Length: 363
Ligand SMILES: O=C(O)c1cc(C(=O)O)c2c(n1)C(=O)C(=O)c1cc(C(=O)O)[nH]c1-2
Image 1: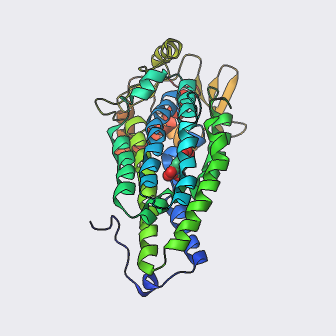
Image 2: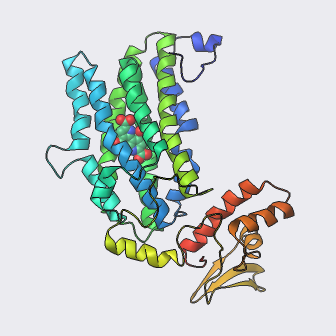
Image 3: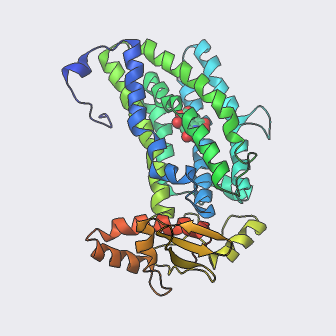
């Protein structure tokens, strides 16, 4: 099989790197490709997603969590050395627990329940995006088919996860009123498990990637894994942020939820659910666009609250008249600024949904 990513054949890539240089090269891959850089994660952590978009993330990510121990069992099955297996098996215990009700998968189910899903719906995996399934399954296949060195190297994304986890937990707690510390308890343990696992894997890769070719294989494996994570977020963004094209059998807001959560979603659907390109946004009763002459600043004036608006938001809101769809507005802005309508549409959907989350816009 050919390498998934062509590696440039230059003199530099033929050279055997020292263990420290190899570690630096691996870190550099993460610095350029790790999923903390993905726009979906930026929106998630900055509080820019609405509840349904956060739900879509929790639901899809469950599939990743559920498959990790299967992936690790596949890696374990390839290890001929009992001392290696003894260490690796801890990963399976971390996710599966030692008893029912324990372990990482269970904690992820708590997270999904915390945002309103029924456990059965999440465990059924029926609403998961096909692209999520394809990416995660590709990871499992990769560790079965490639060398043990590549399988272990592909787990090295965990070197970068503690930073994103801290950022995510702090951001989500601060920005979403429906997220509690308990809901995010999954991540507490990962903060110690991930560095422990990553240290072991890095040490293994440094010791076993003993030729330039093996070192390149390890780097390609990590690149592949970054792409496994990245494509999952691409799929979420496309389906649930912009253009908001949910594939036929994937989860749609309002389904798979416990009755109380479904009831609030239905109530919100009339007002502030996820806005898509064909929705007609409008300002709710009592919310007005005003120019504050003293500060020379446009604001949205809502009962007991005001929101400062930047020039882009003002340009969009001037077209929000309760008759135009998001797509109409994007078309007008595209003409006005001679820009690509699809790009504008994607941007304004994020902005409008942010305002909807703050309840100063509805459809
Ligand atoms: O929250 C995250 O951003 C994140 C990233 C990663 C990762 O980088 O692969 C893992 C996890 N979480 C995680 O929770 C987890 O159990 C895990 C296992 C693995 C792996 O490749 O074996 N990665 C990750």
